[in-house]
Amino acid sequence: MQIYTLSNNKAQDMQKERTLKGSGQFTYPTRIGAYAVNIGLVVLYQWQLEKMDTLLYFFVFWCFLFPHLFYAIYQYSKAAPIVEKVALVFDILFAGIAGALFHFAYLPTTIIAVTISSTVMMIGGLRLFLQGMAFYAIGMFLGGAAVQFAVDVQSNYLINVASTVYLAFYSYFFGFMNYQGVIEVKKSKEKIRKINEQLQAQNITIQEQAQLLQEKNEEITTQAEEIRQFNEELIVTLDMINVQRDEIAHKNQALTESINYAKNIQQAVLPRNDTIKQLLGEYFIFYQPKDIVSGDFYYCVEKGGKIILAAVDCTGHGVPGAFMSLIGNDLLNDIVFNQNIVEPHQILEALRQGIRLILRQKETNNRDGMDLALVVIDKMQKTISYAGAKNPFIYISNNEIIHIKADKYHIGGEQKNNDTPFQQHTISYQKGLTFYLFSDGYQDQFGGKEGKKFMLKNMKNLFQSIYTKDLAEQQTILAQTIEKWIREGNENQIDDILVIGVRLN
Image (cartoon, rainbow, N blue to C red; front, top):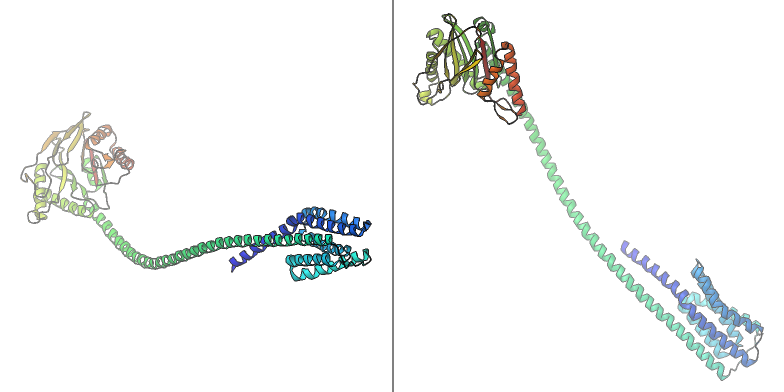
């Protein structure tokens, strides 16, 4: 409906444009011709009657001036249609006056009446025709009054010929106007047709876009429904996850509480600090489990005037390692106090056999066990005896660092050379000797700017740089160094860490 309205409005605008052009620009030269014919016919007729008076001259002057005056007003007027109608009124009025100046002769008067009426009918229809005939009658009355209503019932041959020419001229005018009107109508129809085609094409495009939009809306609606269903499922899933999370959190809390309790048990098993201080004097123990409980543990007892000290690294860490540490601690107590074994190499051998027996490693192929460095300090003889399973013994005397390597055998598990005895090393010491026992957690820790292991070489250099310092300060330096190492590499602690340092006085 909106498309037809646009077409009609456009057509009306075009019709107005055509009407104004046809009424002004086209009729200007035609008016000049028509008025020239009127002047010629009237002058010819009056000349024949020998009545060339002032009225005739006034009529001629006005007929000559009027077309030009009308065109000038029309060109500069903002109300061109009104000017056109006024001009048409004067055209008809002068035609009536011209008929009267012919003394109402039959042929010219009839021709003028017919041409004027047909022209007015063509331009404006019946309503304008009636109005035109009224002005024609007024013109004839005014002209008749001017000639005292003189009537000429006869006209000569020249007047008839001139009247015929006048009729031919107006026929041409009428035909040409009609032809121009037909051309303008055709042009208007063609423009309207093209506009309608464009509007129809736009309408089709709009319909296609509307269809596409509808399909998109349906797709969006479908997706929205799928998202709604997914959200509902997600909410249900999240509720289940929250329930499971709460259950897991509760279990983790219970498990953490159990592990913390196990930590208390493990701490209770480890030697007391006052006992160690009484036996060793000046010492430090840097003990940093990876988890709450540790697979590393330290052992320090006295038997028969000899001090037995060990740094033990059990298989694994956390809870499994903690279980192994309890087994190792109990075995060492049994070996030292029940079996009365105080020689380092013999303690390691007895420990190896005890682990195999308790874990039934021949039957189960279990390979769990431990690595350790163990020393026996005889203060009476001023000697230190050492035996080690993979973990070395390092001491510094007279500013010289000594590295005694451990045997390459693991305590526990079925392996080659199971019956190879452990080697024992004995050194004499003087006052001020400092030695270190440790697990592999410190040296194997990844970190630093290149993300590499700390390595035993760097440990030895660190020991040599700090061994003269107070033992408590040495422990602080060790802790700060490994913490910085881990932080620089953006790493996490990978194993339990145990380092023991002792200075003999």
